[in-house]
Length: 159
Image 1 (cartoon, one colour):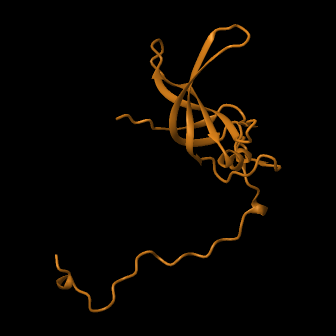
Image 2 (cartoon, one colour):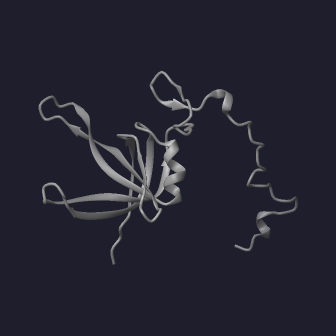
Image 3 (cartoon, one colour):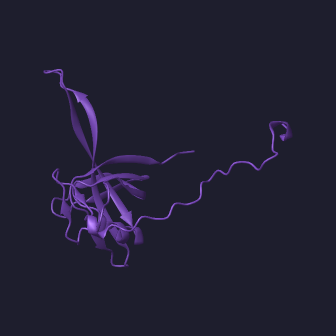
């Protein structure tokens, strides 16, 4: 038995690339920076070291999430690992890479909006939805727990 499962979270290092295969399948390519904390041997200080992970998203999900992602967006991705090997056409050298085929992508940057709309920039450079376009508050749902009816006591429970 083998298990092929991976979960990562990090920031996009570049704008995602959306392309369509000759058969019509959408493919979204992402590059996610996942940081490790390492201690500098000379100074003794802790610093972040980025590990770059290639991620691909296929099909209608790729079309749906592409407008909401941009360089710097924080995401969580879960999926499976895939190893690919090919021969470089220019040099003839064999090349390979390990990438994550995403099954789920969760946006962790607050209030994301499609990148083809004019974003409002916050002082830190993050993109937030303009206040004027926010939806009206949703009515609150009934609580999931309702108190028991009168007359129900611990003695009535058979265990």
